[in-house]
Image (tube, rainbow, N blue to C red; front, side, top):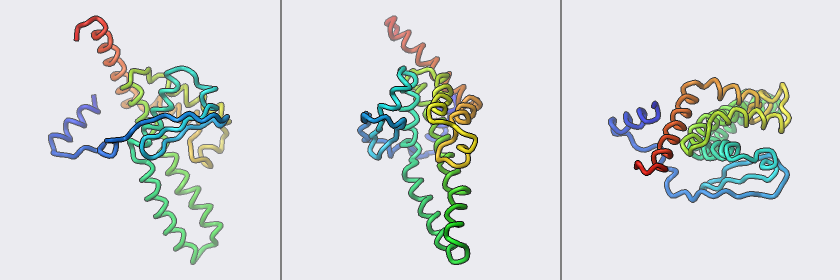
Length: 205
């Protein structure tokens, strides 16, 4: 599997671990009683899930998809990346303010830089989350359906892929299903986990 091969090659080349920022995190899921359909990850491993989301997603696999996505943001250091990018965006805007109307600069910055960058991070978290949920023993085939359903609940529109920080649920579902290498890896992880659990239950390990 490519994850194992990548890790092995990194060790052979003397590379340092890329997940040192995750060490010592005290992962905790906080449930907030609110009808908002949302979840997010805070620094330090705190994941906030609103009951409004749980009203629509009740199965273990669906919740694992959502939690895996939020954990993936921490794994990929998206919060730190967002801060750095925003700093550069702000500097660029301040320079352009000298030559172009501020309102136009802000609008173009959002449409051409900030929103596409945010959507890219969400897609990346979807991919990583798929592997995480599979590693935890959950069926990754559920994930595309979860994001499509999330889009329906949130009210997807034709403009969402251009004017929102998140891609539409339909697009996320499509991209996740078409990510053949990652999807195949997730399925292999699930198969390996199922086989391991079967051997363990039979006392063969």
